[in-house]
Each structure stands twice: as C-alpha cells, then as structure tokens.
Image 1 (cartoon, rainbow, N blue to C red):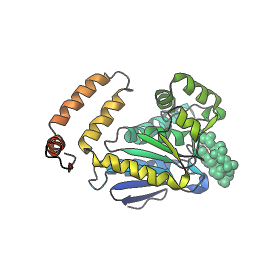
Image 2 (image 1 turned 90 degrees about the vertical axis):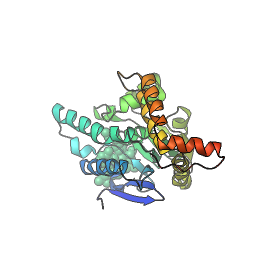
Image 3 (image 1 turned 135 degrees about the vertical axis):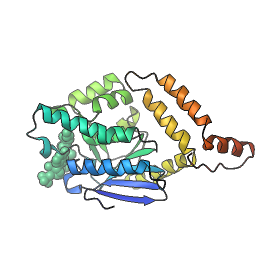
Amino acid sequence: MTYSNLLVENRERILFITINREYKLNALNKATLAELHEVVTASAHDEHVGGLIISGAGEKAFVAGADITEFADFNADEGRELAREGQIKVFDVIQNHSKPVIAAINGFALGGGLELAMACHIRLAASVAKMGLPEVSLGLIPGYGGTQRLTHLIGKGRAMEMILTGDMIQAEEAYRIGLVNHVCDSADLLPKASELIKKIMTRSPFAVGCAIRAINAATEAGVNGYETEVSEFSNCFGSEDFREGVSAFLAKRKAEFRGQ
Ligand code: COA
C-alpha cells in the first residue's frame, strides 16, 4: 500500500510511520488524517506488526499542527465535525491501540502535532524539539483531545498555562514536566525509540494490550479504572502468553510469546 502523505515501512516488526509533508512542516490535512486512520487501524490486525513509531519527515518538524488552510472558513458545525471525526478516527484509535505506539518528536510538535504525540503511549523527543498548543493565538482551542490529554499528562495548572499562553516549551522542559519520557540527540531519536519498542515487543503482547487498556481507563470519564484492571488482569489468566510466561520462568528459559 502506498500513501501520498505518509512514508510507511515495516522493519523488524516495527511499523515506522513518517508524516511526509515536509514543505508544510508535516501539518495534518484531511488526506493525511485519512491515511493515518487507514494505516493505524490496519496495523492493529497485522500479525507482522509488533509496535508503531510515528515521526515527521525532515529535521524541522514532527507536525506543526492541523492544516490551518483547510479550516480557515469553517463555521461552528464544521468545526465540531472536524474535531469529532479526527478524535474518533485517528487520535482515539492510536490511544486505544493494543500494540505500543511511540511518538518520536523530531522537531516542532504544535497544536494537532502535540495532540498526535500525546495520543501515543510513549513520547521521545529530540533535544531541538519544541512543543506547544498555540490554538488560542488563532482564536481557537485544541480540538483533537489536547485540553484533556495535556491535563492528564502534566496536571491542570501547567496545562492551563501552556494552553492559555499558547507558548512553546523546549524538549528539556517537556521532559521535566513529564510531557515526554526521554530526550536525546536528533541522531539517536529513532534508534532509541526502536530500542524501547523492541524491549516492549519481547514482553507478552497479550499482557501489553491489557495493560494499555487498564492504564487508559485511569483517565476515561465514567469508567472505574480499578474495575478495568481487575477484568484485564483476569483476562490474562486465560491467555496462552500467561502459560508460556510462567512455564518459561519456572524452566529458567526465555519466554516465546505469541500474543494469544
Ligand atoms: N497549517 C498549514 N500550513 C502550515 C502550518 C499549519 N499548521 N504550519 C506551517 N505551515 C506552512 C507554512 O504556512 C509555510 O508554508 P508556505 O511555505 O507555503 O508559506 C510552511 O509550512 C513553512 O512554515 P513557516 O511558517 O514558513 O516556517 P517558520 O520556520 O517560519 O515557522 C512555525 C515555523 C512552526 C513556528 C510556524 O510555521 C507556525 O507557527 N505554524 C503554525 C503552528 C500552529 O499554529 N499550529 C496549530 C494549528 S491548529
């Protein structure tokens, strides 16, 4: 499958997805979001994919936001549809993916770009990366989950300041406040993201999927995360991976998980 706005490559069961509109700083237009929906959804059922790494083409930007030219003349209904469709088809699909999804933030992650990174399970940033939700400068607010995910990740007070000022922060500051998990040189970004995802891929894929669902439940409105944990914990006992993990431990050998 070829895409017009993405580069997609499977190397050693890691699906590398690169947003490829460098001349527009990888801004997310409708076509790019549709392709992201397609590739991310398909990867969930692809046995050849163990995890996903999302980054941006070029050295300057991860993603500089939603494509402003596409919604410049939208009315309230069109705005609602834009946010709702994007959230359901892309950002929620990434957050709820049963396989690990890592954002490798290689440059500007602004607006929808930071929202994309925040929908991923883990974020790594290059030291040159800058992040922010500048929507209020355009007379808007974040619409792809930014007000919610930023608040969950860094707390209400800091989220208020970032969103109300629209200011960008540097990678080191993002690390300090827990917005990204690691910061490294640009050249090390993809190798480090690969190393991390490979480690996760050696664990039980079944259990990793259960853990993602249980952790996500912590921030889902109206859901009792402790109950979700009990239920996902219980599901693990019915899995082949559980039998394999325990037998491997008792036999003092390396587990060979099949994700079932
Ligand atoms: N939507 C559409 N086009 C965008 C874009 C976006 N979010 N971000 C950047 N671009 C385009 C620019 O319009 C420019 O296109 P052009 O060459 O046809 O004029 C190209 O990408 C390069 O960007 P430019 O602004 O010239 O680069 P810069 O180095 O001067 O500034 C930024 C970089 C990231 C600070 C600046 O592009 C910016 O502020 N972008 C918008 C960020 C934003 O508000 N995002 C939230 C959207 S909801």
